[in-house]
Length: 346
View 1 (cartoon, rainbow, N blue to C red):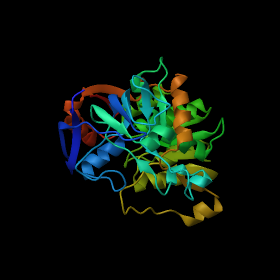
View 2: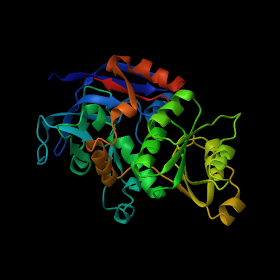
View 3: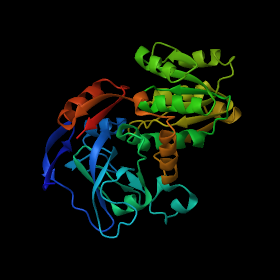
């Protein structure tokens, strides 16, 4: 291994260059991983469009965070991993000592350590993530599947926090990769799923993953009325918003039954506001929740689902591209919102 590698460096708004950079140096407790697969993510597309991420990325920086690969070097003091092992590493690790960590809310950790740099030949995994959120990939699990662990963990946590019961009707608004994960998981949990999407291709994918009813959700349609028609006027037991727009947040609230639960999973643009009917929320006892990120426990749950073959990359990844084509891939995903993930092969 030489001292330089190819990596995608984000310099600013829609300014991305794949160029030689120094291979990351590792310190005590760190590992160095050769990236075999890095998956694109809606968050990465937003970062590319904005040119930064307030909590995670200050340009110029190598970015990308969904990865699986091989250990090529270990730092002093690393006892649980060795060179040659196949691993998947989460993109964060909590401190386990702050107010929120002690209350089981590690995703809200006051010192949450983030790690980016998956769009590169090699990535350094910091000691805290090595210790608390890095896992061996079983021999029968492929790199593409393992790289799904991070987004899947967020979805598993979102669904479990929303707590649908077997037999419940779950409306999923938005059928990009995250929405489709919600569709598949809700079916695995024994729920009836109503999938709301804008495009026929998205609805077809949701149907292939088990969605029971399909609704076109567009400005010219009335998906709220459609959901109520399919639930005898009562509304869904649970509504999952996986788009990140004020309009669809409002749809979600109006889709659920009395006593129902809404999960605002999709993050809206900064400074967004939403109009909610306070009488509806109060007198119908609607629970509104939001889900952000994951915890180590949910990373393990997601990996278990993948190891059992219940979730595979074939559901959510439909292209492979070399690292050199990442700029083209990002531009494509930016103009084709809701498309499936692309596997970047450094």
